[in-house]
Image (cartoon, rainbow, N blue to C red):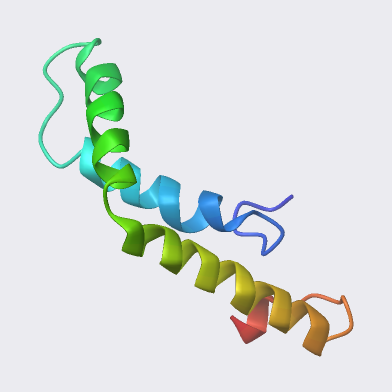
Length: 78
C-alpha cells in the first residue's frame, strides 16, 4: 500500500499521528524516554473521548467515499 493510501485505517491516520505529536512535543533525552512517554501519552489519549469520536467520523467519511465511487479509488474525495 502507498504511504498515504486511503486503505489505511483511521487509527493509522489520526490517532497515531496525534500520539506521535504528544510524544515528540519535547526533545527526547534518552533511549528509554520515548517508551515512557508513549505509555503516559497513550493513557492521556484514553481520557479524551472526543479523540475517538474524531476517529469514528474519519472512518465513516472514508466508508461513504468508498460507497460513492463503487469501491474504486476515493482518495480525491477525502
